[in-house]
Image 1 (cartoon, helix red, strand yellow):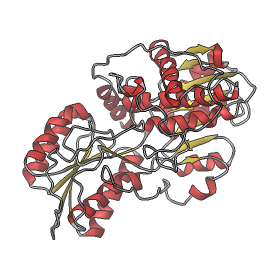
Image 2 (tube, rainbow, N blue to C red):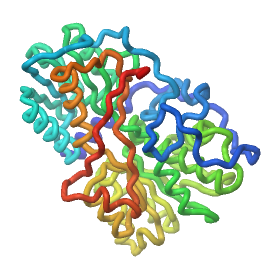
Image 3 (cartoon, one colour):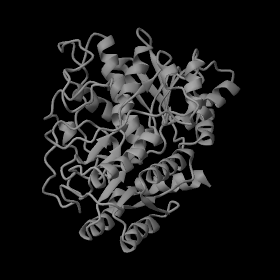
Image 4 (cartoon, rainbow, N blue to C red):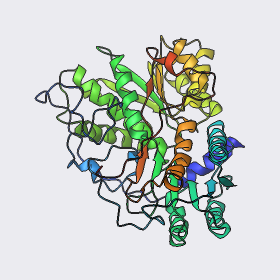
Length: 436
């Protein structure tokens, strides 16, 4: 049932019209400086392993098709102070009624998210009203509208479809009820206070760099398991992985890209080949993706996809999966086929950061993952509610996207993040107004 819900959600996410530009993909040039990191700017947290924006005017920031670019560090953020968000500079009040609209509590990650929101509301003395749409977009919209009717003071929207929910969000704000997004970011010109988000593209970029560093002087024959092609999150992770891989790979071959953005554009064109034909060959950088099959974010989906891939391509040496669960299934499939995971084939993911994945890193079967803690990610929404209504924080000019910290876990730091909890806990999100 969980798989059905996730797949249904994915189809809805991916049904929006897509206009795909066809920018030129120039190969890297040996004339460019050989550096693996651009100078740091305020666009990227210092804790991120991905280099910061190096060319803010590059065409990758103006592409019409944003499907594979969710979670890219924006070069410059314009003020949002003039947008009505249903809040004032000071919104202190004694009693707070929080509405939480979510599309599911049927997976471990989102169940943990709901539990964390309830725990913090209880801790802060807030009344919580939770409504669940169970993968029904019409019900998700209706649930937001019902929270307005119930007279909540603030809505946390674990969004199912940004486009479909935006009208309901605007209705809530017009009624004086601020909305905080959780998950997929709303547009910068929308009336949400901010969206607690993960840098899907940037985390993919980090994992791509990590993978490339393992294959110095070796050709790479890879396979990829996106959650579902057409889904914003799935394609953004995949796009980031390819961008990070080619960025690092070009440096190894002594012909780095002139800017990080050039590598991103080059990788994007390779990613679009996967979208169209589920594979690509890149002789300039001496690697190829021989197969790409959606893994549906599940163990069963990852296992089935990997079984099909290794039947046709038993000599692959690198696998990228969309999350931990797909990785678990892929490992099972490869081990059943007698493949030594961690030796014959390296596996990496933009992950959820489960305890099981951490242990597999420690055991040498997982090269690395990035973290997306539900405790931090969902919890940050309630902490922002507390800052606004209890502490009097001025949230009228926050960026549209407030990202959780990027953390990549490998064998070198896994002990720091391996705990008894089901998921790791990341540092608290810092809510910083634009220009401050």
